[in-house]
Figure (cartoon, one colour):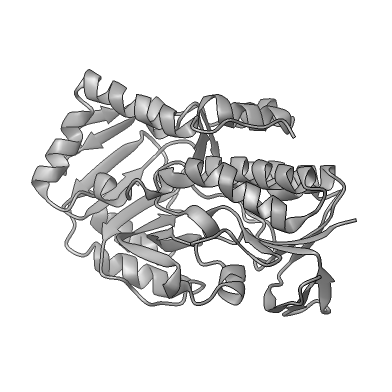
Length: 376
C-alpha cells in the first residue's frame, strides 16, 4: 500500500486525500492549525469541468446545498451612491460556497479514512530515493512513499524540498485582508486609488485589497496584520474610519500578499506540489477550482501509474500545467483596487457595458473548462 503524507488541510489537501484513500492509499494529512479552519471568503466553481469533478466525488449536491446563492455587488462612491453593479455570476461563478463550508465538507468525507494531524507541521524531510523520511514538530518521525505540499503559497514543503520561498514566489504588488467585522447587509464595494473595501454578502468578512510595497511581518500575528491594514487605509473616506475603529476588536483577521507561485516543475523526487503551492495565488477566482481539479488529476495519475511516482508526476505535469496557466494571466489586484481614479472609472465602466461583461464571462468560462478530464 502506498503511503502518502499531505501537508495542508484546507481545500487541495483534503480533496487529494479523498481520491487517494478511495484508490487504496494510506493517507496522513498534517495541518499547522490546531483545528479545521472555518469561515473565510466565498469561493466558487464554474463550468462543466468543475461540476464533473464535484459530481465524481459525489459532492455536487452537497456543495449546492451549502452555496451562498451568489449576490450582486454594488460599486459605490464615498457618499454610498451606486456607480455600477457587478453581477453575482461574475463574482460568484456558477456555484459559490464559503471556503470554510467547503473545507468542512471535504474533511467530513475523509476523516474516517485518513489520519489527520492537527496542530503539527513538518520540520525536516530526507528523500532517500525509495522513501521520504519526515520529522514533525510534535509527532514521532515517520517515512512515507510520497509527500505532497498542499500547504498554500507559503508552502513549507516547497521550502524544504525545493528551496527558499523567494526563489519560487513572485510578489505582484498588492495585499488582501479578510477581517470579521460583522458587517452584513447589502454587498457593496468602495474604491480609492490603490485600495478597496468590500462589505456585505452572506457570511462574508470585510474584504480589503490594497497596493503596497512588499511587507515583512509575522503571518501568524494578528496584531501585526492589523497594524499593516490600519496604515494602508489611513485617511480613507466613506466608512473606512469606522472600520478602522472596529479593527482592534476583530477576533478573526487574515492578511496575505497577492503573489504567484512559479516552479519549473511540480515535483522533485518523491515530493510533489498541489494547489497554491504550485500554481497560485493571484486572487483571480480560479484557485479553488485549480485545487480540486488538480487533486483529481494528481490522484488519478498515481492510480494509472500503479504507484510509480516518476511516471505519475510527469503525467500530472503534462496534463495539468496547460490548464493551470490561468494563474499566470495577471493579478486581480489592479482590477479590484485600480491605482488611479481614471483606472477606477474605466473598471466601473466595464460593468455598465453589457457587451464587455459578456466577453469577460466568456473568458472566465474558457479558462475554467480548458482541460479534457480523463476518467481514472
